[in-house]
Length: 301
Length: 237
Image (cartoon, rainbow over all chains, first blue to last red):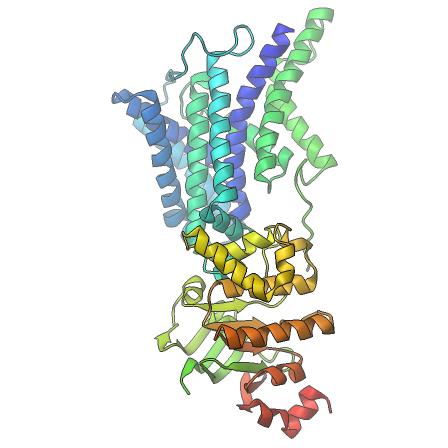
């Protein structure tokens, strides 16, 4: 039972990370119809920025907040400078640019900070945090921080005029212009927010996966899976999808371990986690192509 | 009379295809002007060209200001409200959000709420549906919402594209009655594009007739209404 709870807790912690990256993907997808393949590498770069700030002597949380703000600005700049000229470009051109962006972030991080794996601190106190034997202090901290960030984002989009304008611009850009919304800026803001949420995910997960330029590669795959499971056009769905994928992969591995212990036959285990996640995605997409919470969009021709 | 909108030698293009050829007209401050014409004559394109939603060329002046290279959202901020054809609402947003979006630059919540209540004065039906998603409204209600949202911009000029499209005759009459009230009480000038020429000529003070991208006739509504060709082609008697 205790092992079950541990697996559940660690699944929730991983799920929180997937949820953040998935949300970042969805935020850009709903307003541009593009999947940003560089989202993970951008988050990795942000994590390095926070590491650098800490190396210069700042405390974890100051470095955290600064890195998130810097990521926001970088996200806005990437949209304004690199993607603005591509607004009317064919999809494939944009995909190539995203892949280029991915390679640039990756090699720049390697060039500046080297490819050596670095340890990354956890800001959460070892004792008196978490529940002994069930959830560790860092896992609980990750879940709490991401939940706070997700709640803030929800409140922003739901209750502020700017959030409303961003939703309107995403739903119908032309119409949004007709009510005076500066749609181009809303897109740039969306990129900034996505980069900031990605930064939160990167900084939170770095203590678990260690810091190196390739740290987000697997996580981005999980995030794609989460976004697809939840419904790629649905921000709430992406968050729930993140938790579902996180918990499910751990549960499957746990079940595999139990079977092995009982029968001595190895069927499935930790090594197959990613495979399991991808099988789930294919299964969901076969049965429910719009995702669990996605709406089927009927386009009139 | 002072002209609020001056359009001269307006040309518009969809890709390589030219849709307007030197269209020119004036809209008097406080008046209601209508553009008549068959399908494909360029009525919608003219409205879209005013708001820079299609590639265009020529002179457009609003209150003396040149709208030349201005992007759509800046033109709208000069208080030109465009109600596009086909019920332009944000279907996934609520009625309330659809209205508030038009005033999102206004930080004062009290003012926005007061503005909204004033608009509800014209459209009491929308008030009952305030938290409903726009996509769940009836066609007539969506058209009303689109006009109400345009009013939230406190426009000096309202561009209306086929407000009667696909609606029951009774609803159309109601909407046109509201448009007259808006024109009189809010001092909003209106440029109306309509297929239903009889209805449009009743409401408007001035009319322009477009054919294949050119103005072929213009004048006070009374004169246009009694023109032999207009009667035969557009009024059907």
